[in-house]
Image 1 (cartoon, rainbow over the protein chains, first blue to last red):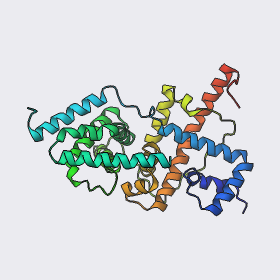
Image 2: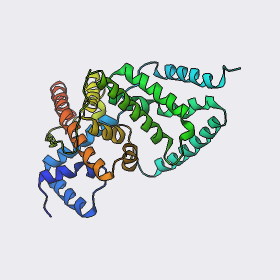
Image 3: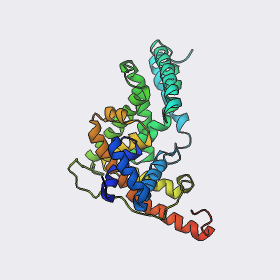
Image 4: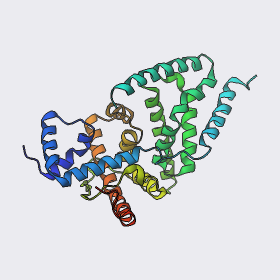
Length: 84
Length: 218
């Protein structure tokens, strides 16, 4: 089946997740091979996901870990009594 | 993402199961070790929800404390990380409700019937490399804002799937929604992100092209 671009965009997210049914997948891949516009949409969406998942995007504040473990320590020692 | 990670995920689960039984057996200090790999996951989940850095840190600490106090109720039928991110998600929601209650900001009440424009931006000449783009602080802020400003129902799926990289089944389980609904929300959320971010990346590329005479292009 020939798909138009708008239909292919509907499948972009599932295509990236490799969750498309084999029959649809073949049509989408066929379209992507021949359509510069849709392959650009695919590439840019993929890259946006790479940006989102990158550790630098939501970086931990300086000293976060120390403050967290200090607070946990005080909670833990409320339960157990101070360390001997 | 397939083979090796699965093996290590089994090893991780075994290690965590052992740690949890030691903690429940009285070695409570082992809790530090248990949560150490998940500090970033918890912080970024809460931060994506509440938008404010200081509040995110408070929320992340409260998430860990809550996990410590409720560790007995962890049944081990999901991964520890999935259980923990569920608590983080609920902590973020709780804090958003509070913000709403005092009228500072309203929650986006978006439902599935929400009519939005979910058409991606088409840009054929984009060749920006994500890892290079993120070297700029401005770009990191843009990506963060793009996640944080998504309507709530889309944000939750994008955070779990694309930020914390849970799989579809885990994400659906955390949110208590069917996979079909998850797919719709994820698709829409991703396209909204694409629309928001691609224009900045294009600009970045144009600047670079001027500076480097297109040396890295094509």
